[in-house]
Image (cartoon, rainbow, N blue to C red):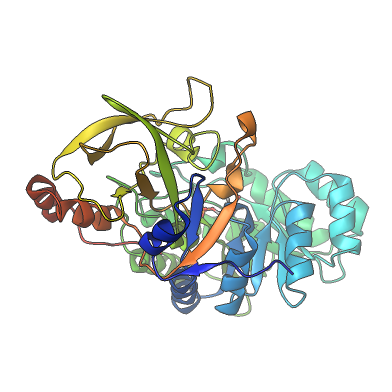
Amino acid sequence: MAPKLSHFESVDAMVARLKPGYPVYCLRPHELERAAKTYLELFPGRVLYAVKCNPHIEVLRTLYRAGLRHFDTASLAEIALIRENFPQADCYFMHPVKARSAILSAHEVFNVDHYVIDHAAELEKLVDVTGGGDGQVCLVRLVTPQHDALYKLSEKFGAGADEAVDLLKRVDAAGFQTGLAFHVGSQCRTPDAFRDAIELVGRVIERAGVPLHYLDVGGGFPAAYVGDEPQPLDAYMDAIRDGLRAIKLRGDCVVMCEPGRGLVAGAMSLVVQVQLRKSGAVYINDGVYHSLSETMTAGVKLPMRLIRPNAPIAHDLASFSVYGPTCDCTDVLPYQVELPADVREGDWIEIGQVGAYSNAMTTRFNGFSPETFVTVGDPPLTPAAVARAHGAASPDAREAAHAEPADAGAA
Ligand SMILES: *Cc1c(COP(=O)(O)O)cnc(C)c1O
């Protein structure tokens, strides 16, 4: 069993104590537990956690402690991670493209019985390896109408409506329990995307004329980034309920969702240290090849707060280029960051909203590999919280803080 993480009352207490020259992930278990309970309470069905988003064991343990028992897994390693740590939990193999050997191990070693496909050839694999039938569930991944989201997952995966009708019939004929699944795209800003996708589901099942046992509405629930404050989770749940009310589902159809980002993003921040200050630039010890790759790949802007224990911080803010630790010139955040104008070597910066797709995506490039985790008691570091923190020092920023919408985090 992995040892428990060191706990600190606050991020500032951790910095004062460790004075870390390495990046430190600061997990907020209380916040993660609260977010998990919110999803479990509000979603009209079964909540699966998308493990790829943040597979750290303490994240998984906290979600389990909060009552989450279902996990969306996409590889054998993820399945093993869940099965070995939580024998009572269920794994769902939700990757539409799987190695035959992975299907075999999932089926025979780990007793997984929910699989996703989006093509007839993948169904054939599943039938070849598992024999089909016998309580197995096969969900067909459906392409959904395009809305405003950071990643357009329907470009890579999913069957069109006609193909999905055909696949559903084949899945039923092969003796599986049937399902439909979709993903509206990560950091989806429009709750109506879910309603529209469910409407499409209604048309597909009507045409297929087979009983539907599972409907999986996927992930895509948003987190609070700078300049990208989401609508509350309630709006998404309302859109899903509206969608469900408008279609004909069997009474025993299991409805599922698979939140990743919206569930965990707010529950972790990252403390980095400034290694060098030049006039318009700071060099920190984490970057786009490590915890901050989504600033590049998804264009997310992360809230950042300066920490300088026992010394005053300048009141005025300035814009900085923020460089990561590797020797690669592309290791730089793709936008300017507002920080106190006197930021200097040895200061720390707390970067908020990194619970999703940060530690999960780091490389070991150039010998850097952030791997220190602690737990802290602070509330989430949201964009509004940063505006307040820097605003406390600066009258200008205080006005900016007032202009910013209140914390509306989905998580
Ligand atoms: C990545 C993924 C999720 C989680 O998506 P978020 O946008 O992080 O909520 C859910 N389901 C599937 C199939 C995924 O690939």
